[in-house]
Length: 480
Ligand code: NAD
Image 1 (cartoon, rainbow, N blue to C red):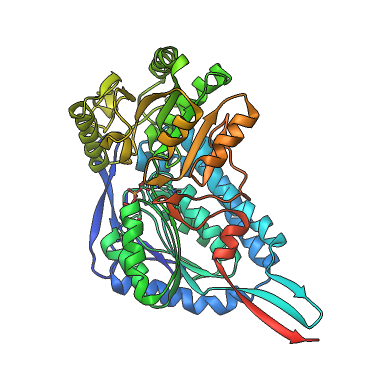
Image 2 (cartoon, rainbow, N blue to C red):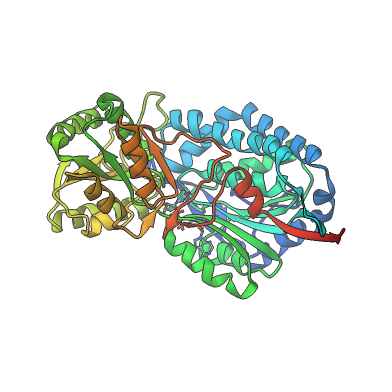
């Protein structure tokens, strides 16, 4: 495969340093191409292109910008199978997931913001007896979007779509581990004659390309999704240029399972919420808190349910559980499993790498792993592992469950399982997390706020929250 180049001002261009990073297919453990590693010169070029296109793009009507977003969505949809194939090649996720979740959601991101922006308060009015105030919201200018490898196109477009519909122009960097679908997005933009310079896609690692975006004086805001350590560094590095920040970071999400829940629905969904995308979704449940009256039954039923997952070559249509997305991440997960054993954890199932015969026999596979006998204060229960590893803890009372759930630095999401509406609402209000699901998981209305509390996030994405972030209000007051 040809080297993956930057897409700046509507053209594919080589990185100025001619420096490239290997891109590996994690399901087979082999390099298949290289991706540009951009430096300051490349980021300068991308920012200049974005700056030059800003006046014209921001002057378009919402309707015109909306039409462009719809065209992007249509063109991705036309090429859905190829996008899905590339997403799976880059990440090792099952092709069914790429086809049913990742790429359709990228399409919806553009379609959703194309429509939602038409109802947004770009201009509003507040009057009293003395004054009339017009509040007009303006785009910020050039904004930076930085995204991770776990849901590559899904999260990349979740930032780009609200940024551009609001009139901003963008310098966007996907993860260096999963650049393929972002690269293909450039082809889509060329195909539909999308205005040059509005979306510039730059590649490279965090310390060069990412950091240059964050420090750039002409970039007005950073929308970032990734790890908490990186988000913290971004907050530090952007401070001297005073940027607006939206930081979506790590999680260690509790699932609180009461004995009065719809049991079979719960087991089925908990299996998904724990192990979808090999546990590499920031919203995955990783600490399962189970009421003691059903603890033993839950334990054996979950092990049984997980044993039925079809693990294998991500390209096979019926595979439900694929490879870990990179060797570095695979090593990190294995080292956490070893640590769990040292901390006294009892490995109930999994706990090791997996050998998949055939094409994938050198791939990075780890068995779905369930551990119990660890206290909530253990490292395994406090650190984000971001892989197919969950722990079980039992609780007796509602208060105890809430305490365990909240006793952590993260606060991204939680699920609550109970048919008692009052109790589940009470627990939801007491959990310190930005996204709570009762009797479900990953159900998303894109108008609702998305983001975390504590070390999991700063700001919210979704609907008006994203459009607020990507615009700045001006109040014009007239005396009456
Ligand atoms: P990461 O933080 O290592 O990298 C994310 C992105 O930031 C990549 O594009 C990377 O190149 C870039 N980057 C790295 N260092 C940088 C720097 N100093 N300056 C600017 N950019 C830099 O995260 P990852 O390993 O790609 O993704 C996994 C993490 O993402 C997990 O912690 C997961 O919880 C989190 N995540 C959070 C959400 C959410 O919505 N809260 C969603 C998905 C993933």
